[in-house]
Every structure is written in structure tokens, then in C-alpha cells.
Amino acid sequence: MDTIFTLLMVLIMIASVLLVIVVMAQNPKGGGLSSTFGGASSAQFGVQRTNDFMEKSTWTLGTVIIVLILISVVVTGKPKQTAAPIPAPAKTEAPAGKAPASSTTSAPVSVPASK
Image (cartoon, rainbow, N blue to C red; front, side, top):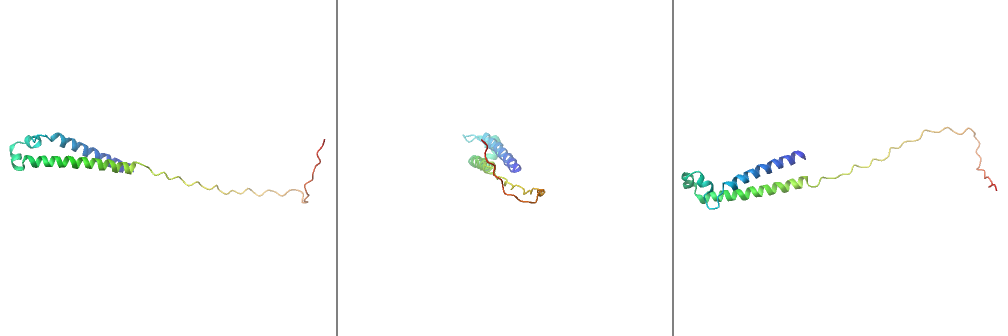
């Protein structure tokens, strides 16, 4: 269980760092990444295509982070609480006692109450 949680946390951190990089590389006015690399790349790919890729990657990374967080909550949210079965008391038999010395059986004697 701990290794799954650790793996999910590492994946969430990687996706978060990538999302920060993608968002920082964007420019809402169309400059962003395409203007950073010069005219050759923008003439080849076009500004619109670069912005579409950046927008799609932003949404995809955001969705991936949310899904990973939900999976980690489901996996580690409610641990199963299985109660250990209550062991039945061990049957211990008392050692056999010795027979009384007298072999005659007598009825209980009632003693009158004294005043």
C-alpha cells in the first residue's frame, strides 16, 4: 500500500512540474513558445498550432493530476478495518481431585438456629 501511494505522489509531482512549465511557456497573446525559438519554427509549425498544443497539454496535465489525486484518495482513503477474530478461551480442565477420605455419604444435616 505504501509503495502505491509513493508512486502516485511521484507521478503527481512530475505532472505538476510539467504543468507549471507548460503554463509558464504560454503567452496569451500568441507570443509564448513560438516567438522564443525564432521565426523558423513559427513559419514551419505556425503560431496557432503551437498554442493549440500548449492549450491541449495544459488541459491534459490538469486532468491527469486530478485523476491521480482521486486515485490516491480512493486507494488510501479508508483503510479496511478487519477486526481480529476473538479467540475462544482455551479449554483447560482442572486436574482430577482426590476423593474424600470417608466413603460414606451422608445427607446434609440441618442445624437449628440458636437464640
